[in-house]
Image (cartoon, rainbow, N blue to C red; front, side):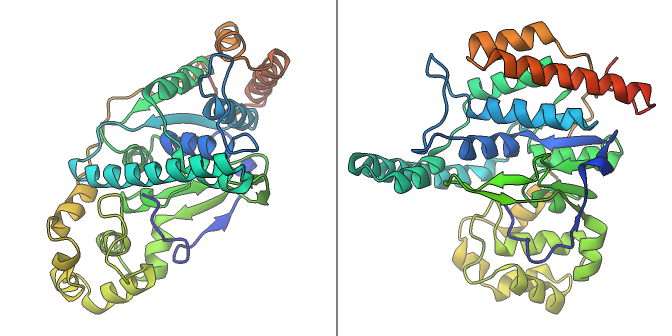
Length: 346
């Protein structure tokens, strides 16, 4: 969804070391799209293997995941299931945006305008079923659990944290908060920097932790009011929200009307902006999003032979680099076991 709550949330910078031994439920699609849009050639095109298969997402996934494993983090990757029916409108909108970007990219390529090529190339990013399947293979071979959500991945990670099966959810988006996620971690990267989309430049970032309880307390609202604020300013189910209403105005409205949500949506003329969509449908979709208990969190040994086979032989990764990263993770896991940190695999 990418809720625009950045200016409203209370956050605190943390170190990777503070997360050692803790189980983190990762919003996998969010992470993979991150890599797909930022790990690209100078002209903005995705990286591929010799057969032309996209590898940008696998490069980012392998590099980031092994680096975090070296630091003693216990990662569990959660993947999206069937999206809510009302999300179809969002897909239609995103498809239109990608088609427009593809057209602009073609024009920029013909004109040889590198900056424009980089700008529009990242907006055409698409994760196919094959790409997701390859990503899941990498995760399995690294010995990490994969959880299949029945619907939205971020809702499932939120549920796992609420249930106590994970310490925090990991995502760049704030969506997890409206699904009731108690602890959200953003900017989870060992490097301490992140590539700016569409450029070759990097910006310094530090991991940050957001506690739902602190956010609600700071804003003086409850979870249902936060959900209404999200709907007013825009979610995946009503992209763009109500014209002219951002998070701060939405906060003023819930403060003014308290829990008279019908009054809020009447005042902002919801039906004028969304004649074919009831606000209650969006609200109930968020509140009652399907989640599951049908998952196992089990960490196993890295399958060194098959990870080399997949990345080096199938996707043309550098053999020495892959072997070196795998050996570092195995060495780190042994050290953590010796020092009494929770076991990483059975």
